[in-house]
Amino acid sequence: MGRIVILPDVVVNRIAAGEVIQRPASVVKELIDNALDAGARRVEVRLEKGGRRLVLVRDDGCGMDAEDAVLAFERHATSKVRTVEDLTAIQTLGFRGEALASIAAVAHVVLETRPPDAEMGTRVEVVGGRLRSVTPAAVAPGTVVQVRALFMNVPARRKFLAAPSVELAHVLEVVQNYALAYPDRTFHLWHDGREVFLYPAVAEAVERVRQVYGAEVARSLIPLALETSEGSVVGWVSPPDAGGFRADGMHVFVNGRVVRDRFLLQTFREGWQRYGARRPYPLLVAYLTWPPDAMDVNVHPTKMEVRFREPGRVQELIWTALDRALQARRPVPQWAPPAGASRRVALPEAVGTEDRAPLLRPSVSSGPVSVGPVGLPSAGRVPPPGAGESEAPAPVRSAGRELIGQWARCYLVVLEAEAILLLDQHLVHERYLYEQWTASPQALPTQALLMPIPVEVGMADAAFLAGCSEQLRRLGWQLEPFGPGAVTVQAAPLGVPADRVPEVVLQLRAILESAPRDPVAGWDDLLKTMACKAAVKMGMELSPDRRAALFEMWQVLKVPQVCPHGRRMALRIPLTRVHHLFGRTWSGESAP
Image (cartoon, rainbow, N blue to C red):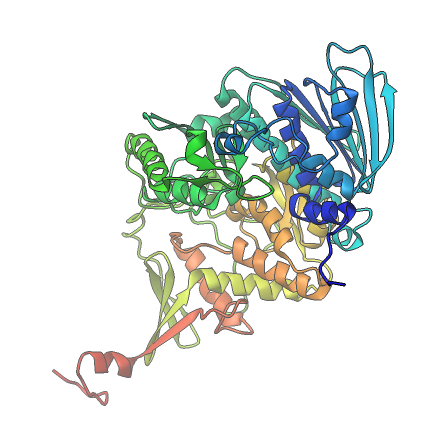
């Protein structure tokens, strides 16, 4: 007897489920695809425990009769493709016929559906890939799919599901993507019986951008609009001098399909970065239209990637659209905008108004830097290049060294008797924060803000941070909800400057998600990452007081050579090396 066998359907379905269904957000994505293909004008998503306990998707689409309701759970059973030729011009979101079969293979699924012209609907129950029952049901027109106990028969996969707050954040991103892709539909999300958001249908896509990101952000965006004989791209992109966005803020839709295609994302990024962008990612909402027969969406089971027959033509379309939009803007400033004036943050007037506020309120003595108890100071506005050049601050001397200034808005320049010393301003501050925080292994010391700072973090991050309140407390943060998609910062870790607080808060989710699962290694990694995000940045003009504070910090470091990640923070250039570069051999006596 041969060793090769044909796998039973239950095994095949479970293998397919591993490709298509990775977490509750995958379930939501597949079910929304089906709902929109069914003509739904309203989609409601309900979760319990981040989708670990329940994912429910309700739509008002065309529904199914009893025969189709049962067939929908069979692999490769679909109403959207009939022939091979259909695959070359796919116009629907779903077409593989794998979604319900894959979900039902690893969960307890109940489907209730009814066409609008039918008097009675149908209820189908499938558990672990096995049909349990098919019964008539008195239900409203449309379809409701309940998915319980996801990965009930795949304990390894269930074990690696994240905390409910993390899973909720992933679902939020999925639903928001579809809300942006289909502004003329209504999307409603609930979690544990609480309404998370309601996006009513709107006539214009820009109105949906306002719903998701707020009016302030929407006003700052630059419109994109270009149509050629081959295709078109319309949408909005943030100015190159804006900051604070992450990779998940790039939303690209191809013929109505939500995609995360590397080629498209990189093309938009490169075209945007050519205009002097200081940050890696823009906020982007782009609707690309391209002939279906000139691209392939059947690349991956998740249908999140596309392949174009002529990618160069697509790239040319995107770059031309960006060029026309961005060239019309005023010249991009050559210095970074104030960190406290991030496009997502509205700072109270009482905060961040002093140019010369010290970084951490250092003592004027030559001893260790002291931190005052009156709250976090702010660096305030970042002056443009040349500001303050006429200042003549008193030299800062300590232990045979003299701080003489800042070079290239990146390095502190220190003179020694026989050398010049360059200190990386970002790495010095990062190391200082890390050493201060590691001295408190249980929880970081917290300092209350004189004035709470509101920060718009987005719906997904707000939900994620709400579920991590205990971990954030250990890290020294006290955040309170402040309307949809926003929080107020009541307290921050001791040592974080007030003008850095908003940007660090915008990075908190990424910081927490990137930490290892090991409690010890994870805590240390969190401190390293947060210190890096909170430290003053390269390219930041520092007042004399802030330079002096950093200089004193460096002198009290336990490890003054490298940052927590191992990068060199100090470079010493001996006087003998300078003489050598000038072709001199000098013993210290007068020379011509």
